[in-house]
Figure 1 (spheres, rainbow, N blue to C red):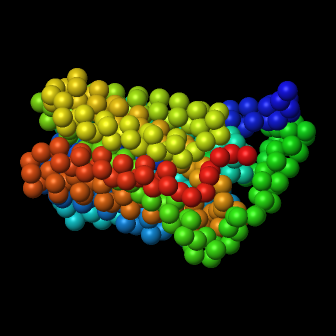
Figure 2 (tube, one colour):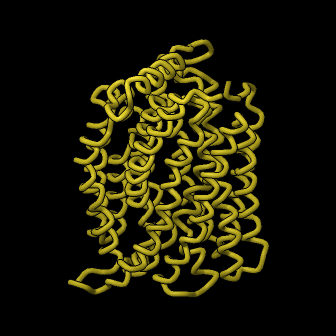
Figure 3 (cartoon, rainbow, N blue to C red):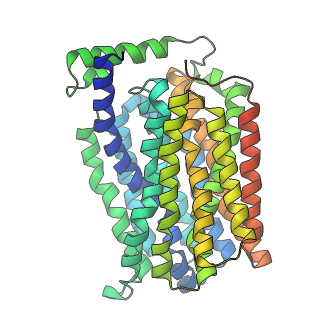
Length: 425
């Protein structure tokens, strides 16, 4: 029979942390990808080609990836609350400033600054979760947290649709209202982070003494298991294992952002509808993405298995892209096949993040998680640019989507041939 203290502690931690972190990540993700919702009207108003838009969408990741590791090391020095609050305020300022884009140069500059401002948020939260959830509970916890990336689309699509209809109000374009309104929550939530986040279980006044003791001991015992684990950042950086485990994530992220930044335009190409309706319909694949995150993460924890729970969703995502290309390109079919792709791509995320956190400890965990995220998010730079270049040269989305499918298949193969089993003990 399960320990009632353990059950109670984990239940309280889930209800206390996950909804709040989920809210923060919705704001983060929406600020990162709202450019996709703004794209149809912004590109027309500013005369951006597909290549210019793809470059601006991807350039975010140049600064983001280069600053991930330094940011996470500073998070260890200053503490989670202070550093996450700083990150949120700075990215809110830059996201709001996107309303002043007036050409390719300012578009590139502000997207670059937005990446620098947000660097460290996601790996910082993943590192934070390792202080609260034992490994056997982590895929579901990460999956629930990362449903924000999907629900940001569900919430952001209708919100952005409404904001785009403010076109002309007070002399601002609809896409300018979108950037203005959607950048404010990050700044407003920054002071809440300082008062809401609890650094470690030992400081959690909302747990009973028995619950605090059990969780502190459980996490300490897990962190103390250093056999076959990397403890220093140098060990992690020199580890082939860490670099190999980063490869599937690179493929996942290439597909993830390759479709995210182009989704409204793909939907418009198959429907011919106006931008507001297209953005609203773009919420549908994100509902499927939410289901993928929750269902696959829960299954991975239940079976104590990781690699197949990364590989199989990769293959489902690839299948969704192939079907999008091969089936008749009607609105209903495109939404259905893109939903299959979204279910698979997002479904990989919870199980995937149990892989590097299983063998990283201490400073190696802070820096190593950030490094994996940096390697993966090179895909955030590559994905939108590849799709944009292919679209511009061929006039079709199909070759770009097939490229994304191939990348996902490669990620699945690498996940399956990893030599070390990632079963939870």
